[in-house]
Image (cartoon, rainbow, N blue to C red; front, side, top):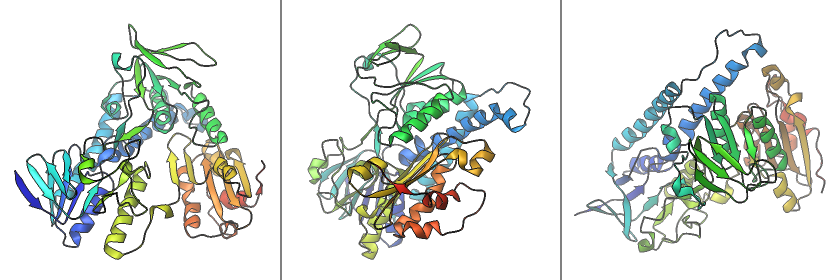
Length: 461
């Protein structure tokens, strides 16, 4: 066994780990980078990069089928070649994955270790036959799909967002258990590729974290493309059938069993923290396995920090990268950055996409904030009409007394981009009147933000 000493050890190469390794290396620190699987983590290998590449292919197929609406004639039948879709996705992923690995291997003061890392003490990590010690250790191990304890689940083959990346064929009927962000993106995607799709959700509505109008709007969009949706599925069980899988449901409406060719589980994620030996380093986790951290992302061991999905402070690539910025800023610049300064911001990449920043309407009501709300359907947005994509709406919430912007929700074309024009204003602590008075480019979706702010009404209830 070799005993090696470093200035910093980084476990995992997701969104935040590599950037932190590079930044610390640039200061002259001797850095160890440990990766047990694929460089780049979830986002690069089976999350954002591959899924959004496939979403783009699905959108192209969908638009081709709608060509006649735009005066374009396509004589031959639209056919999706799933092997080519996968090959395109693999090429994009491969470039990103290879780029991260080459980046880490080229660090001037860095050394890459391949293997599974386990703590052997507060400052010591073992990888294969090497024992590494450093005064600063950073855990960036990400998460994995949750496999629910569902009757019959062990008796049938199933897919997750990870294994689905290897599919190069078109499932005849894809059953998706989970009606939230991952499940809905895959559901619409494979419906557009040509599969029959049924989404099964235990809650009374889709994406229950969002306001009811958002859930209803997303459901309407998916139903409009013949995605079958089963809600209130309280008692799920799985059984093998002759040609695929049967999912027994207890729903208020519909048949008691849904039969399909393939099953996708999209019911959440769990952190990769159960086999790191965290207890040997004095690092505590919560009841869901997420590493406990303070506002500067330091764990219960003051020499160890946790970044990305494993700390439970955000399940997104952008929040993971911000974790890196917080830690690097505080370590190297004494910047005093905190997780609590971060504004909620994320998107659902269905079509139309949903972009959200700040508080939901339900959260505003729960906090008993006296608020104003403005709302406009996308049918009254010129750019949406011109594109022939008028599903959804724009909604803005502001605090009546202070005029601060509380939240923005855009379900509609370019909604995932437009919300950023208000996110910057929230970070700058500008009153909504400053945003309202700005002149924006026509014809865009963004130009309607000032219009919505000019139509604010008291939030009732």
